[in-house]
Image (cartoon, rainbow, N blue to C red; front, top):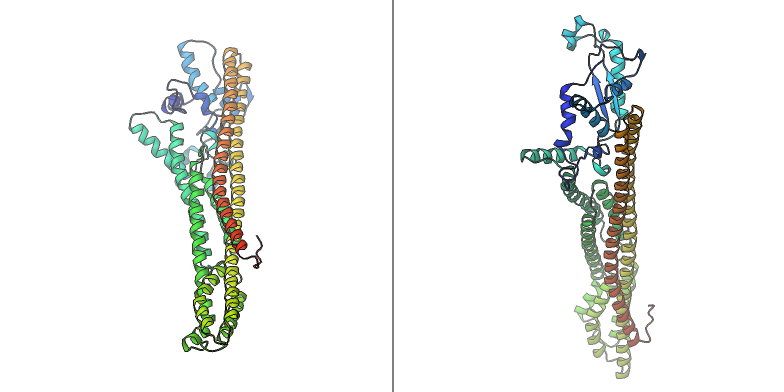
Length: 500
């Protein structure tokens, strides 16, 4: 029968002294915690020549390994030294597999394995090798840390550096501290990645400015959701929502900036359009074409035609009404001068036309304010939808975290139940009783961990909703102020139709 190599025995025995799970209790035995996130234990025995038999019966490699891990009864020093590494392996590793590799070829071929013809390789060796590869590639799980955090190559690099730095300083690496430190690095990078996704998408959209507000808002919602998903896929341990808040605030700042750029692009297009449409009228003003009897009506007719053409061509521009309002106010100076110089009109007719012009200007001002109001309402709706999507993603992330935590706990509990059953079967009642107490404490800690995680999520969601409500309150206040302005303007002009 084969026994365990001394080097492996020493390594497993001292493992609990080489790494800590938690930073709180320096003297606590945390070996039972390792089973939650330790990988599967695969023992590969090379050049195996013994028979896989126990008490004259053929057994599998796994059964042979479990037999080798069997504990001895007694309390002597030799028995305790014999049992310790075996107990560690049983407690720390949730599953154990053994592969016994025979010699790869005949003894005379061993000296030139590198140039060995494939046909000379032992079929038994190839069969074990094939089973070993299948186990590694298809049955092995991805490496995880506590709470189900997946160890990617990048995370492994962070871990390795932290462990080396800690060991170099003379301290014992602590997994909890390493995860906290890693979470800061990963969460900061996750925020940066999310912002890059959002910014890259909006920069592409920017090439099509100016656009209708609904188009910009729709793309904002899509990219905001994608950016949040990118953040969620990389972030972990953002228990207070600090990094999600940073992402949210930065996206909102960028969105406001792109809205401003879209408005400026719309404003320039509208101004260019009005400049082109009003060019003949401006030339007539320079030539004094309207400085004659009946000139005011001609000027008003030209101005009306410009307005109609402008509205037909700029009807979807978000700054259309505002730019037209500014244009009409600027032309009102020329209009008043032409009106006063028109000798065809009586004093009373001039007064009527002057009041009519004021009403037209007021109507245009109201239209501009109504459009601004409509755009604010659209922005409020966009923010509401973005918050709903963000909340959905937060809940999805929380549910995934809870699922991983439960899987981790179930995996560990299954392992502990198997070990307890094995101890009872082999007559180690005292050890089985200790294992039962350990499992009860394990269940209590898991229940507490789930409760804490649910509370943390509730607090994070509450903070997110609070930020949303504050943002909504500011926009609604702006909404009410604009509504009040519109009401006052309507009151000043009862003859102007305005839908509030």
